[in-house]
Amino acid sequence: MNIPPNLPNARPESHLFYQTRQRRPLLAEARDVYMWNVEGKRYLDGSSGAMVSNIGHSHPHVLAAMRAQMEKSTFGYRLHFETDPSERLAAKTAALMPEGMEKVFFVSGGSEAVESALKLARQYALAIGQDSRWKVISRRPSYHGCTLGALAITGYAPLTDPFAPMMQAMPKIPAPRAYLDGLDPEDPATGAHYAAMLEAEIIAQGPETVLAFIVEPIGGASTGALVPPEGYMQAVRDICTRHGVLLIHDEVMCGGGRTGRFLGADHWGVVPDIIAISKGFGAGYAPLGAMVAQDRIVGPVLDGGGFLHGYTYAGNPLACAAGLAVLSVIEAEGLVGNAARIGALLKSRLEALMEPFPFIGDVRGKGLLLAFELVADRQTMAPLPAAMNAYVDLVELAYAEGLIIYSRRTRDGREGDHFLICPPMTATEAHVDEIIEKLTAALKAFAPQALRAMTK
Ligand code: PMP
Image (cartoon, rainbow, N blue to C red; front, side, top):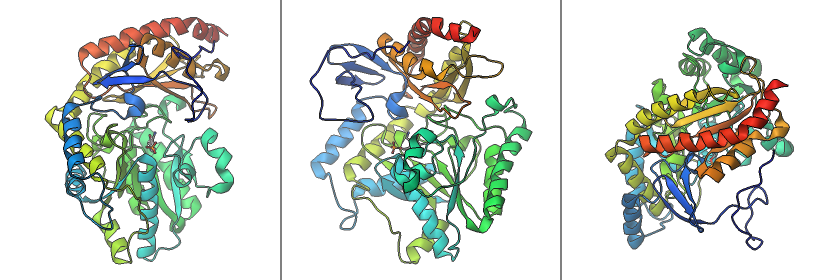
């Protein structure tokens, strides 16, 4: 069908560019879960941007904290000054992490957090005399960032293939997509089955060459809110420990409370060696992220000559003041609990949509990191034809209804189009009603073409 994008009026050619020539309405204002364009059309931010605006837009407490910090200082170069907001945010972050994750390194986004984790891991191996370890195993599909290091461990061919000659090829194992493989995610044998793939890969590569394994505890854009099968996270931890491989959790999207626990991995009580966190950490108020690591990893690196890595804007006091205020709002308003409660309601309402819309093949996720996937056949989980561009069209139809959702098509030949439904953690029951109402309207408009594809 290829729905035309919802651009209200023609505007002059822009000097600004991102991925495509596609234009978007001009944003006028955003408050809590709502955003308005300059023509006054209101959108419910059903994906928190790209799963970023976890506490909603323009929260007065964060704005006040940022204003207050701006009056004092907006920059202090880390080699010249320590700043109070960065010290306090590091302490607060460490307190929210699992036992032993005590050292915090600030960055300005998710790719930087992942890149930093890779470089810390390598420097740790060098510091303890394990120079042969450099390979980082990741999963396919996965997304870990757009910089060349983070991209090398990303399992998403359309983004990685063009740059292959510029990157070091890194080993990949399949993500545990039990729903596609016809396995029961509740059965511990399923978790063991996928975890065994990691051990086999470590052995095939030669354990003495493997530096780390990186995994999103709960999948984000690439797998569409994939929750690992029973026992998987614990088994992966054991395998890494057994082979001296560092375990890196990419919590860039699932960290910060959205899944109903502060970290995605908190659902399983698994402690990694290094964590990357970003999106919900700055929550859209400031470009902010962090790499958090165990003291036993950071110690040898600092003692062995220092960490050879750092960004000019790292630990920016304004960004850190925003981060501190975001964490205090999450705590004061009980937003992690709200994400669990409202997320359970929203998930059950999404599941109910499977009845009228047989082309919804799966609903998954935890808390307010939720997704549904469209299929041509629920039994085989065959995707809708790629040429239908469902991942574009349904988003445009929802957009026209005033609902923002986020989509991806993995194109690894198996997975269909999936849609992330991830409103801010401030969402209420009334917002859930509104999301379902608008989504139902978009799905109804989309249904004729999907149903045609199903009967073929
Ligand atoms: N890791 C994960 C899991 C992500 O979801 C993202 C962003 N989608 C990144 C890393 C990269 O973050 P950024 O876009 O902030 O660089």
